[in-house]
Image 1 (cartoon, rainbow, N blue to C red):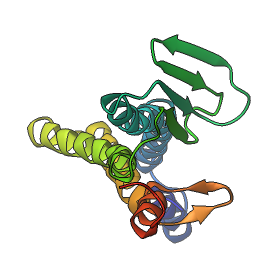
Image 2: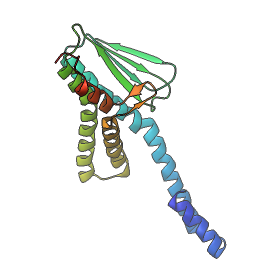
Image 3: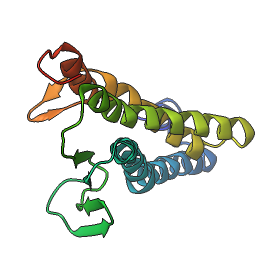
Image 4: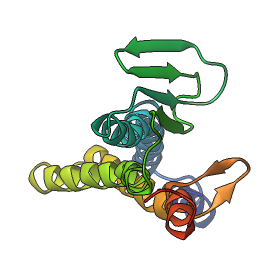
Amino acid sequence: MAPAGLAFILLQTIGGEPPLKEVLLYAEVEMMHALLLFYLIVFVAPISILSHEFGHAIAAWFFRAEKVYISIGAGTVKKIINMGRFRFTIAPLFFAGGMATSVRQPDYTRREKLLITAAGPLFSSLIAIIFWGISQIASSVFIQLFMWFNLWIAVVNLIPFQWNEKQTDGWMILQLLLSSNIKK
């Protein structure tokens, strides 16, 4: 339960009906929570996920990928955008993750695969650092949410784990480091 909700219930049980001022404060806090949740789902998550995947895509492009695919969201694809070597697909649950893949012949070396994989978390970290700098000048909860969400994406993606058929960047980096049959 939100701290404001707990305070509201305490006021009701201790002193009967809370004064109008507390009721309005509670409503204002709850409205702010709803606004922040909306901001997180509609703006922060999709932009941060796209930026993370764009980090992988830029690295693949740098290593001369023939085609780079960036997918954002979950569900049936609703929008496909082709821009040169890049193909973006967007699904309705655009806040629910993403993936970047690329192809090149000959295949990437192990070093190139490591750098492409690490580029996503590095890009998320860079965005978190930029927004930390912005928050030092013009602090707001919206800027801080953007900073913390990008830092969260970077850290969680570096933890090596596999869930169903998806692997984190950390898992892929670990597999590349442990693999002996991939070209150096």
